[in-house]
Image: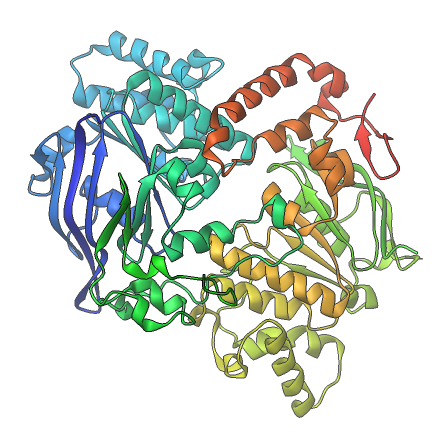
Length: 332
Length: 308
C-alpha cells in the first residue's frame, strides 16, 4: 500500500443551530492514500460535503466548530491561519464544485480565471501563465483553447464550464483533488465525458481524488475505495470491488437495493423508511441507522458501535450487519 | 382507440431582433413529432437538456402554444381547446413537476394545495371535500393530519407526494411527469417511483414520463422515445431500445449510463470512446442538413428509427 497523503483523525464539524452546536461530521477517521480515488457516498444530510469543506477549512467559523485533526502530508491544517491555508488551497489541494456556473465569475474571461491561481501560487510571468492556461484548456479537452481562453462563462455549455473548473483545480498540479458532486448538474453523456476526463487526468498526474457523490453508478465507474456515510459517520469503508460485490452494512445494502435497474424492472424498488433525521434530533447513541430499520430486533445493534474489520480494508460499523434482513425477508 | 394521439407537433419560439423587435428567426424546440399513448401505458421521453422533451410535455398540457400539429384525446380533436380553462381536457390531463420546492405554494396549507383543482372543477360540500382530501393523502401514503401543514414542514420526497396527490385529485387519465424524481435522493426516489406505479394500477393512469435518467426510465416505461435536436431519433419498446438500439445517438446515450459493476469499468470506458469516435465519423449518416434528424422509419412493428 502506498503512503498516506491525507489523514483525518476524529474529525468533528458542528454547526450552530439556535445557539447550540450540533455535529454534522461526528468523529471521522479516514486515510486517503497517494494516487487513489476515494469516494464518499451518502444521502443529502449525511455529512459528506461538510467533511470535504472541513479538509480545507472552508466553513464559516462564525457558526461552525471544527475539531480533530486534518493531517495533510503530515502537516496539521485545522490549526493554520487563513494566510497559511491559502498557500495550501489551490496549490496542494484543488477543489471542483457541483455547480460550474456559480463556481466561475461571470464577468471574468476564462483565461484570467485560470491564471488567477497561477499568479497566486507560481513564479510564472504573464506569457508563461498564458501558455500554461492554454495547455490546461487543451488537457481538459477543449477543441479550441485559444478561443475558450478569451470567452466568458456564459458563452460555454455546462459541460464546458465544468471542464474549465477542472482546469482551474489542476492548474498548480495539486496532490489532492476534492470533487464535490462534479457531474450532478450535467447530462449523462456529458457526465460520462467528465468522468473519463477525471480518470485520465488522475492516471497522468497521480493525484489523489476525494469524490463526493450520491450516485452509486459514478462510484462504481471511478472509485478505488468507497466510504459510505450516514448521519455524520462512516458506516462502511471498503475497496470498490468489495463494496459492490459484498456490501455488509444495512445502509449500504439498502442503498444498493433502491437503484432502479434492468433486473428488477417490474418489481418494487426497495425504500429506506423515513429520512436522515435533522441535526438537532439526531440520536447520538447507538446505531444511528437503526431508526430507519424498525423491524429488526434491538439486540442485534451494539450499544456503542465500533468498527469491525471483516476482511483486510473492509470496515463495518456496528454488529447489526451480521443479522440484518430486509423487511419481510426471512432471517437466515 | 388511443388515449392521446399527437400528430406532427411543432413548437417554435420566435427570436426577436433589431430595433423594432421584429422576428428574425425561430428556435425549433419541437419539430414535427408524432406519437400515441394508450390507456394505462407509460411512455418515456428521454433526451439531454435542450432536446425539447419538456417542451413536448408542456405543449400537450397547453402550457406552450402549438405552432402546428393536432392533438386527439379519446378520438376527439382537442387542439383548439387545449389552452382553455376548465375544459374537460384540462381535467383529464395533469402534470407532476420536477422542482418540489417551487411547485408548491409556500403560503398555502396542504389541504388547499390539493383541493385547488377540485374547487376549480367540482362543486363539493365542505364535508365531501374533506373526505376526498383524506382519500388522496391515503393514496400517497400520508396521514390525514398532514392536511393542516405547510409545504416547508415536509421533506423532498413527501413534497413530491403532495404534488402527486394534487395531480391525481381530479382522477385524470394521463399525467405528464416532468423529471419527477431527478431532484430527489436515491432512497426517496425509489419511494416516489413505487407510488407512481401503485397509483397507475389503482387509477388506470397513463404516464408521459419525461426524464434524462435512463435507469429510471427503464424501470418505469414500456415504450420509449429518444429525443435529440427537437425530433425523435428512436421510438420503440423497452426491449427494442435497450437490447437493440439502432441510432448512434441512442447507443451513445445508453453507453453513458454509469454501470454499478466496478468490474466493467475498463470495458465501458473503451465502449464509450469507440461510440464517441463513431458518432463523429458517421454523423452525416445519421443526421441530415444542419443536424436535422431524419424521419422515423420502421425496423419492426414496434421499433422506429430516424434514418435517411
